[in-house]
Image 1 (cartoon, rainbow, N blue to C red):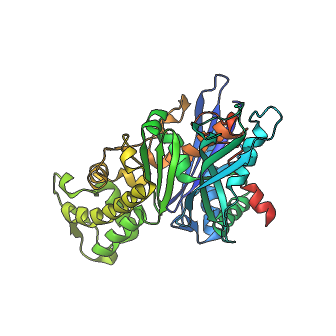
Image 2: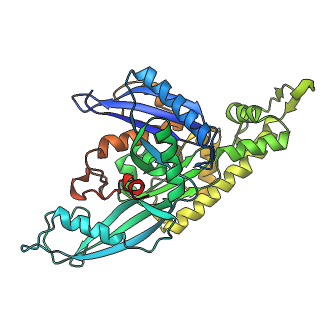
Image 3: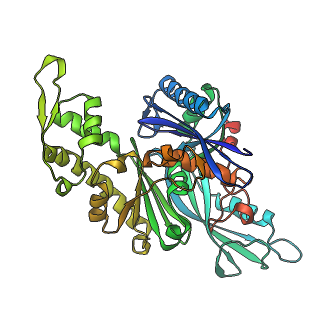
Length: 410
């Protein structure tokens, strides 16, 4: 194996590590998968350092023993409702004597787009170019080598709270690992479950996790809008727990095994028998009742997602509809409900594109982010770049800010 990459998804309900490598033919093989329940996170943000460190250590140890690869450095995901994104624009003069766009000009232009007033507690995580404009000619995706006097760029800037990123950094380092990069989770998930054609015709990716629901809107192969919603699967479990007066574990199991997000999808209404707590008599639960507890919360998630999609201005451009991924997408009836609330076709997105190794193990929406982090690493490890058209990073240079620089400044 030439390149070994480890993706680490530190979620609210689980921590997941995926080890992958490429062979001499460039095929990607999954070498190891490790997961561990997460106990120190709330809505994608660290709330208990020691518990998070222990969850990371367990997941990494599992992945290490399964793959036989010593794990030292990881690519880690960041989410949480502190994530914000906005559009920015930059302009520069092309400086060379022959007026040809060089890599240095592109880097200078990207730097110019970062000149935005940010509160002291926020930093830029990613700068993603949408398009370049040379001497008024728009629609340029790779300006390298073109001639012109003035070059502009429209970019999508994603920012996060410094402290939230610092806490993730601290937990990973204390677990004895280095962070080679930090990536926005919906961006990572998109690498695992979306095809280039979907990104071209327009698609919304909705990753329903434990603590957060992450949204990314793509059109013409470029990410156009991102948002992180602070309601997800854990809230559904809480609703079941409170409504039925049962334990958290029982509520989670009920949701996974018998839950429906869409009441009309319940066909057989066999009652579910749950053992009583502390010697009390068993509880009988109606599947319709369970669906009536789950559906309103899932509807709320999709309604907020719909507002975000409208806010992006791309609601009418999404011929690819919505792709649902993450553990929350596994609740039966979720696709039907999403399609009804969002008014567009919906499907489940499963990680794909691997040649060998533990392929079956990761063909599950739960692993989308961790697998996407691996894809991201394999694609950008040398370039630390993201290109506008979804092609290799050659043309756009190192526009994805390496987050290590944050921590050197502190």
